[in-house]
Image (tube, rainbow, N blue to C red):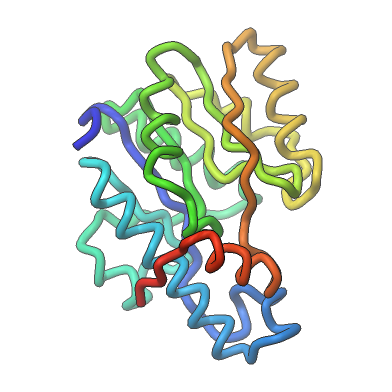
Length: 203
């Protein structure tokens, strides 16, 4: 088990048909895309719960039955863009006494344990850790203190997310580590790639 002072916050949408993984619907039905989302989220949540003592689920719908299956604290993502929601959760985490915090999405079920463990252990030497992905974003962000400025003025869902975040971190004089580039699952091709790279699907 890892450092008990670290909090992992998983940003997760409820599995609702037609509302999740819509880019997979070029190949799959809305129901199948929802099932893929559920499988991806289950893998990410199960792995994180296995590796870390403190895990929160940050849900867009805290009443959805899917989230209850994991026996983890469930918090509302709240309102606003992704950055505003993450900043709000960061504030809540700080109020609970957590300084080291890692945000994680559910689009990288193929992520190796080592990537998560490296990100958290590196907080002993860096202020911010970012997991680069091929589309210009990141699959995780870890920080050794609350730095809400990292979530402001970001062009979310664009190829500029990582570079804009690094630029803000530089302005804040934060020492950053960028992990080896990986990828998120957005398209059927990426889904096939994740399975080829060893994603063991958990449903």
